[in-house]
Amino acid sequence: MAFGLPPSYNLDLELDDLNGKRFLIHAVERAAALGWRLRYVCADGFVATTDISWGSYGEIISVRIQDHGLSLKSECIKHGIQFFDWGKNKRNIQYLVSYAEELGDNISDGELEEQLIHLQQRFPAKEIAYWVGESRKKEDLFSFFSIKEGYLITPLLVMVNLLVFVLMALNGVNIVNPDLEDLLRWGANFGPLTGNRQLGRLLTACFVHIGVMHLIWNMFALVYVGRFLEPYLGRTVFLAAYLLTGVAASLTSLWWYDYTLSAGASGAIFGMYGFFLVLLMTKRLEMAIRKDLWISIGLFIVYNLVNGFLPGRSIDNAAHIGGLLSGIFVGFAFIPSLKKGNLFMVRGMTIVILTVMLSVVSRMVYRNLPKNMDHYHEEMKRVISMESMAMEVYRLPKSTSKEKMLYALEDRGAYYWEESIKIIDDLNTIELPPAIRKRNVLLRKYCEVRLKSFRLLYKTLDEGTDSYQGQLKKCSRKIQQISKELEKYR
Image (cartoon, rainbow, N blue to C red; front, top):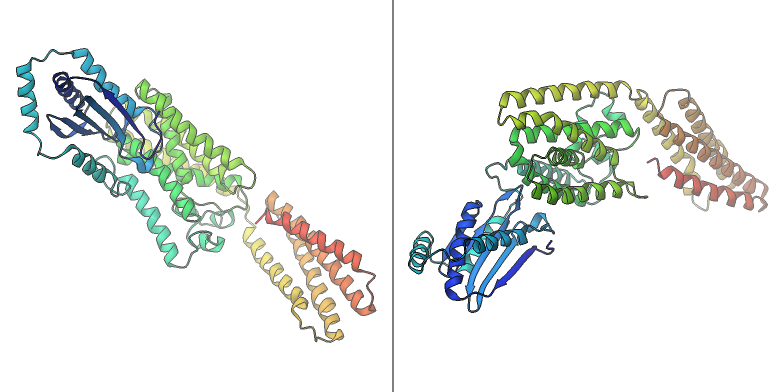
């Protein structure tokens, strides 16, 4: 297995000039039989490239006759989407060597010269180095966006995601760490809003990303799986599977988390990797290909899921798992139509049935979502406003009179903390998600400690004593502790 930028494999063979040319003829025949694109052939060697497929990652293969034998090289030209070749480059060279060894020297000297002349006439007279450079340039330049036969939906999805991100940036959204309000404004998935007759967020959330790195990694993963999967499934099935699993991932996140914002294409991408797994499990690919792809796909899935469970990571693993499982389900649903070939009617009916099933599940989840979140948010706005007014005492100038300070501490500060406690107590009488109820418990404690500290400050100022400083310090430490715990629910 080769690693590098780009990954490659080299092999030098010691052959005399005559046997080198025989090898060249056999290698050209083998390359054509394998479906490689012959870019250039001459008496000194040839250059061929492979297309992205189940058995190839897009490589450039060059064979050169040199002073002391042959130099063979296979190099990944799609290095923008891979760091490992999983043995592909070495296998390409072995294909040529084994075929040439099998045929041996069954070509006479006269036939050899005739075949070399015939091959040269098919290609313009350019140096091999030129064709290597041209092949790289053709394959690398805007390869993420270039639309080709069998590869349309993936670049379009990438472009849509990029366009949404650019529009967000042009409208003032922070490209590194966007605000939650901005993400919600652009269609992120959030239980209180999605459950309040905004089910379209299940889909729009798949095209909204939480910062530029989030976007880059997701687009990298999308291109990687799309270059393999789309040519095999076809445009219609690929797009349908992507959208269905994306919505299913958002739905899983909505069901799992009561009060967490989610966004990004990773749920849909996990769905496509789930579809990928189905093709591997059902043995629809050659054994050698399955072995390589099991490693690549397995590493991607395990790494991302484990990474999502690490402490301190704000990764929506519910969407990842929901996308993966729905991708497996969708993959098995499409297997019959893939076995029967390009039957548009069968695939169309499969898409319709899956869409209806997803709609039914969406309605079931929607009916079980909390329906009091709008009221909760309005009351929380009041609590936040009251906190701001209560804390005005700390913004008073040092020249403020004792009477005004006492008034600010008791008639405004303590009053607003008491009112906040009443609001929280009223909210606990309605149906709310468990996470919100836990948050309310902490909020009430926070308000109680703040109220106590204001009363102690009032006594300190009114009595002109320092005897309450120990209690005030305890209140301060308690406030910091509760504030840290509340951060988990934001």
